[in-house]
Image (cartoon, rainbow, N blue to C red; front, side, top):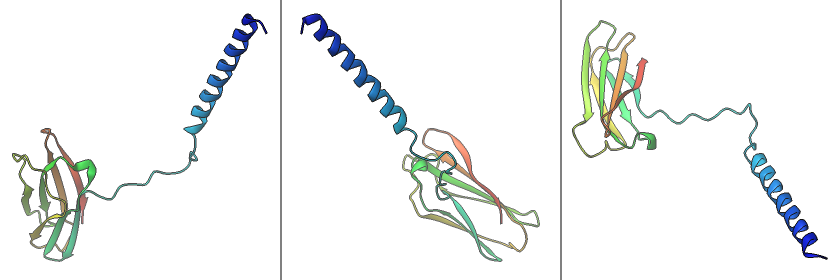
Length: 133
């Protein structure tokens, strides 16, 4: 074989290998059916009415909220009476511990609006729970 034909075959083999690699990479990204739904993560904050006089706010913990400093909860009962309490402190430098809870006491016999705002280390805040119980 001449050096020219040897270079030709090496180049052809290299191009074929690169094309095969590109096909494998493209096919590798399509391993799940398109109709499959993503699973939702558990709620990062929950509100539970334990009886007609108590509502429990719980922060079981969540990796996507690892920089959470404070949870501020406002509950408006069915008569329009509002209570606001906080767990943690948004001026702190220590994240809120997983498993933190807060109990509200009142008359919770009808539909009660629960709004929980999270305050984070980067100075941001967002509603992490907005529900009627």
